[in-house]
Amino acid sequence: MDRRHFNSFTLTSAALWAAASLQPAYALSLEDLTNADASKGLKTALEKGALAAVGILGTTDGFLGNEKVRIPLPGYLEDAGKLLRTFGQGARVDELVTSMNRGAEAAVPMAKDLLVKAVQTMSVNDAKGILTGGDTAVTQFFAEKTRSPLGVKFLPIVTKATAKVGLADKYNQLAGRASELGLMKKEDANIQQYVTGKALDGLFFMISEEEKKIRQNPVAYGSSILTKVFGALK
Image 1 (cartoon, rainbow, N blue to C red):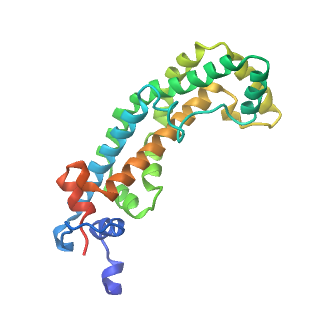
Image 2 (image 1 turned 120 degrees about the vertical axis):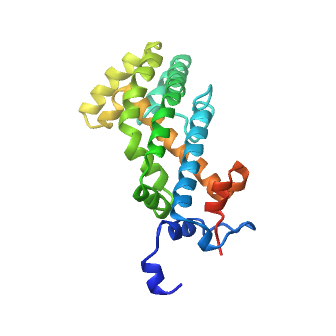
């Protein structure tokens, strides 16, 4: 490819560059892939990945049973939990951790509409940025478009789940004092805010994992447009 062609690359060539690590037998010619195809293919991939992530996390043990996203007690309170166990309070600590993760599992399905809307309203520049932005581009896109409104949606559900556990209030009191002393982040000093943030982190992480799968094997998702975009190589 000469320098003039490289410097004038379009979304189409960006899509091909993003797929360059693949080695499919179903590759198309460069001319077969248009900007519209690239944009549509990426939207299809992101929507499928987002909905798959919601489906995985928004079920019983979606967080609690997954070590990659399981929500632990934050910071030094994890050590405090170990101390409580030595005094026979292990069951109550486990109950709090379980309620934290159950709150996240209950909240995640609320993300579906906002995630789909973010994908559907994605601009050509958004698509170009994702295709050329590296491994964290998808996470960054969804975080920028949805993290704040999703936090608003998640918080009441998380609050309801953690309110069932008596340790939640004690956690907030203890963590509040720790925050004043600079021992932990202020956003971690409230268990509901902490769980909400971790639920969002887990959601974006899982979306990224699903997107990687689609890039690596688009044929497995049974979509001709995904195969066309991510399999277009020479």
